Length: 551
Image (cartoon, rainbow, N blue to C red; front, side, top):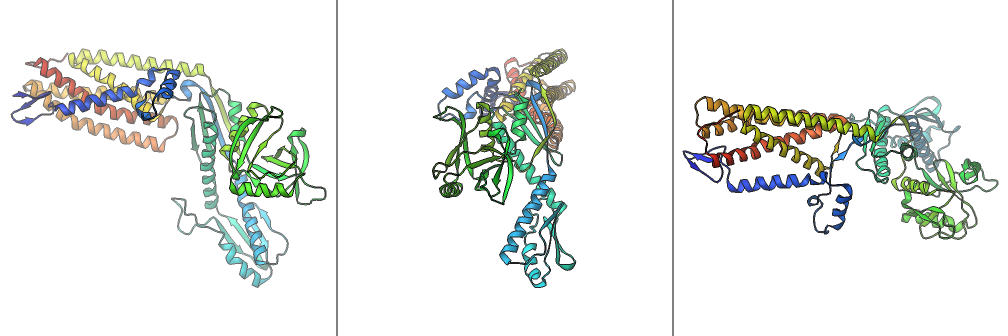
């Protein structure tokens, strides 16, 4: 028998316990770096911000102790809102768009039409008695029905609408069920992105925004104790339009309330000069003359050109700035606005200007979102949850330490050290990934404690069996670690697969549990077969025991 750098060799064979010096250095570096990543959890937010601001720019963010575990809604309090997409409005928008497309085709082909174009639910219908004109029009209309290629589960040949011909030249264009499902899916995805941009502008950390069911969106904002402001931001569709107030005698107009005059109704042209989709920036500021809060905005090149042409031809007229069907401001055009920038003024407060800027920058929602459920979790309840979770974890840890030391003696102390490092590494990974810790996440951490202990128990029981069979300490340790390795890997892989299924199929709290459990499995396997093995090998090299003593 001859001792190596750490551990031993026996009869020329490299045992499980022999660890080369290069591997020892790698293990220690990995452990030190993992513990370093957990440091931010022990620093105040002010201290972390100070470190981030004072650090040189060439240092990667991952090397700075600035990322701490983010507490979820149930731990630090906040706002919870469940929103529902107005599917009827989406259907109406879809059929209106089809009607406008058909109207353009009729204009291009100069097709004679009997009566007008009617909308009945999800169907657009028109009557073209002339057979030759109808034969020329129908291929153009059928081209409007696009195949649903974006849906992974869509069948081949499924389109967004069906086109049928009836008697006496009747043409029906109906939005299919698959087409509406695809439209709702796109609206949900677009709404989630818009909501995320709006909430990020509030300065909150790690909001949870995800789809729930067929037509609902769950929004959870930890740390936000003002649900009314959140609801105001989420509920606004922010459809911004620039039009002109109608002149006397105009026919193509609609009536809208003017907020500057106490919601007095005014006539506004239906023609939209520039829409919110051409807006590239909106920032809160103050009018230099009146010192009143205003919103300064800028258009893209296309929007700036149209806006400049319209204001040049209409100097002296009042411009209607329309937000969600209401005129929020109607300034008079004193001179052409050709720079692509302007301002929205009115009887705004500073808070209203900030919120309006957020709405305009984040873009418009594709449909109205209705609040179907809301609740606020107070910080006191979150503190109670943290206290309860901390007590549970502490009691569990103490009981585990007592059990391991009582059963395995000195080896139990090694297992306890490995268990502590395991928890530190787990929090280091959670911090680096920016994961949100919830109550189910704490449950996953507690379960990780049990699994880590289980790994050590498997190793020590294998070693004890080999020692009882009469093997030497060297052989017992080597055989115990070797045989336990396969068992531990198999058990943890199956658990890891289950956690992965929970993560991809679950939502909210279930995913939080799956994240901590998955990361806990990785840290458990790492500490069991690196740190525990390294400590046992070091002890064996120093103590050179004649026999192994457990308990």
